[in-house]
Figure 1 (spheres, rainbow, N blue to C red):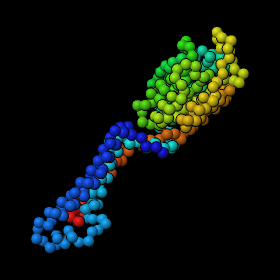
Figure 2 (cartoon, rainbow, N blue to C red; figure 1 turned 45 degrees about the vertical axis):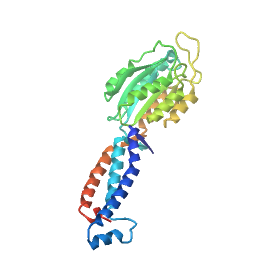
Figure 3 (cartoon, rainbow, N blue to C red; figure 1 turned 90 degrees about the vertical axis):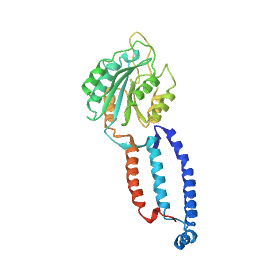
Figure 4 (cartoon, one colour; figure 1 turned 135 degrees about the vertical axis):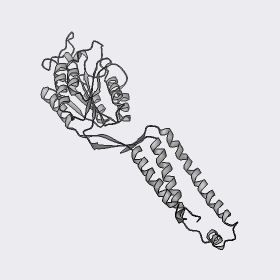
Length: 311
């Protein structure tokens, strides 16, 4: 479990707690001095009687202190994150569209096989989920923003074509995908498929840190047979950086899948679509405001009792 704050600067107000404690002690002493001005033996006795560990009105002060802390936490945007089960998830389907995806070790090639499997994946998503589509090569292309129109999502996936920009920038694909998910408050998942390794762009470690910071889970799928395949315009055989993809997935609480054939590719997407355990968040502001309202009523009641009187 982890607690984050959308505006951590508000937490500086907690430094005011010692000031409130000093003010409380000063107020008690002031009331005692005031009581001595009256020739009332009962008031004098209350001032000089043996001290209690807890005076009556410390309860009222404690309630005020809790209200103050709750206000500060609510203003700071406190959010609790934990691993839990949910179907309210936002996905980014990221598909490698570099030239190597034309390799012929899948029928008719890797890209077409990937698009078919990704389309089936979207079809099996829960109705209350949302999905975005991104393709990437030497840079990333946002094909479709988050939507629950799965028909449009599948059409967008089917329309992905090979990009002529050289290289493969997996880190940029992850960072761009995280940015697509940022406006939403629901659990966030990236399903990234590639047949190669990062050859351009920033180090993958930066993308991992960025995803973890924003509580985004990455599932990585490496597509390609062990023998590899030749792709259009080149005699080279692309290879998958499985260690890097495993690290990307595992460090973001996801998993890596090696898709050596169409059956394994379909299985990978199926397992991801059936995974219900994600990063779930609870924004504490509504709960804290309810606590504040309750404590204000308690404080009002205490004002009519001995718990708001001179110790």
